[in-house]
Length: 314
Image (spheres, rainbow, N blue to C red):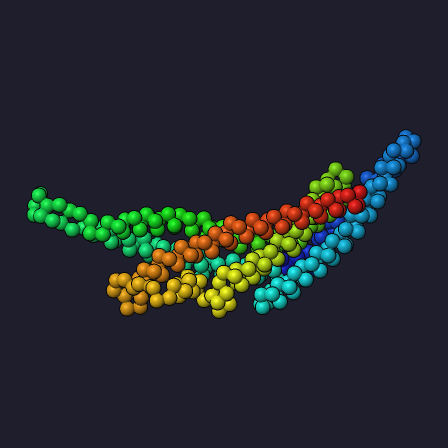
């Protein structure tokens, strides 16, 4: 994905975009010349009116090619500078969003899955212990710790919930990289080319608005998400790059219970039970609510900007 973005910044990619736009404009000029000759030959004033309107639209499309590309670069650089200033790290909004999602997936989701899986295996082992009363066929076999079966079922349910949320984080990471690699170098030029021709003008305007929205608005919303989570939910853990589950466990204070034989406190029941539950609420925020908010902002920009370039330049 990064190779495509690097290729766009090269002279070959810029020349390819210029050639694509120039070819579309030349094709449109040739078609308008044919229409103008037909209007003069058949004495059709409506053809002349069509040619004059399309010449204006062609000029607008070429103007959009220069202004939108310049505005896209300017907005992208402005977003990168804001992202760097807000997050305190180098890189554009895509890099900040990817690092944030990578942190959430690795330090929150995977840690929660690891602890849930460990507690489920521990519960299975404890639930399998039985006691026998009586001798021979007259004896009775009963489970020694029947309540651990309930804990096992709860852990299975929590694992079933955490898994799709973790998958959502990975999909968001991949989506950010795809957007970074395709919107500015490919989708935006395609929208300008489609806007040159009358049958595809509305589609071109929509694609232009979509490319700008996903290039600027969508990644910058993830910078906003990172700051919200960093400032409200886990300020100490995120700022110091600690494990969120450990931070949540430490907030429980002296009420933690250690169980079973482990010199390093590996089987801390409180840490294994309560931290994944708290992490699940954190994952729910980033896996469901915040991406939906990003899409709402992006779609709102697409609708408003598409209406603007469709009405103001028609």
